Image (spheres, rainbow, N blue to C red):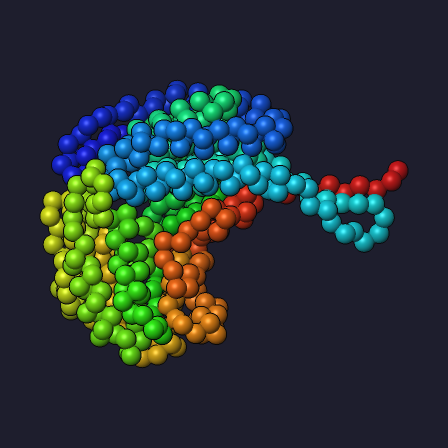
Length: 454
């Protein structure tokens, strides 16, 4: 495994980083365990203050972090700045709510005495993070757990080593003790050994189904708590609207954000008969109009995919869809590592494209007879991360939201994630929640304390 910064536009390797030796991995785990013994005893208010400083420093070093993100995975610079700003807000959210997420929870007992649940940290946690949001993904895992008193060993994606180093440096600069946050450049084999190590109490992975399955299997063998945030093929249901143009604008924005490489982006556009033809025409026009551009230039909306391998995979998916009978309405042909806005229609359940996640700016449009049919198509997937419903009928919105098999439902909005809103899915999209107060319940010992008089 090679940790390197490779320009997504040109393919040029700009920086390389040495993979850790087994001895360095052992040292990192020892440091994290030692750090936990110190960090867990720090008063909650002081832990929160240190986490607040992380957010403050991240804002101060905003240009540096955004530049690293763009250099490593091709995110347009404006969007990279947005990721840094959101990450700082997430970190502040958990510092602001430190008292809430660590507070004792009294229990009304039957009989004499009293009882409470005390939320105590578990210990060293191992995080395996992806490349598509190199700072945001780490912030939403690390911040609540650091506030709780856990310590973090972090294996970042091999193409994000500069961001990985900057994040470790940030936590030290903020005054957290050595070992509270430790970066490792580990191979997959070493990652398996870290999960098995008795010093590690839990593991969190954000990534593909394959990665999640491998991590969950290893964690299960060693009886470790595991949190999984995996892929998605989120439906975007168009049921009723007085402003189809606004709905189309939201659809295009949602599908092209982060160069189309977002797990909870709308990917399957399911439109009832009344709006289908107009939506398909307008959506195709909108996707075709999104220009490709240099991600380092402000104002670029659609930059390159993260790597040649990512472009190869997406091209293969589109080619197979067309070969199996799908209609290609725009795009569909890579330009180096760039992939233009692409629209497919006439995809049926017999095609691979019906079941796959397109991790790039490809939208698949489905015709639905009515609301019931739209919900059926939306739920006919192994994924269950997010979903989007566009309707001007609040009763319909509530009814459809209840019927959708997904961890999140957004009504009449996209790109609306926020620190206080829990994030996660069901089915093969994951097993846990990040963001919001629910994230603080993933890696915590909910310790019962029952007291009676002598």
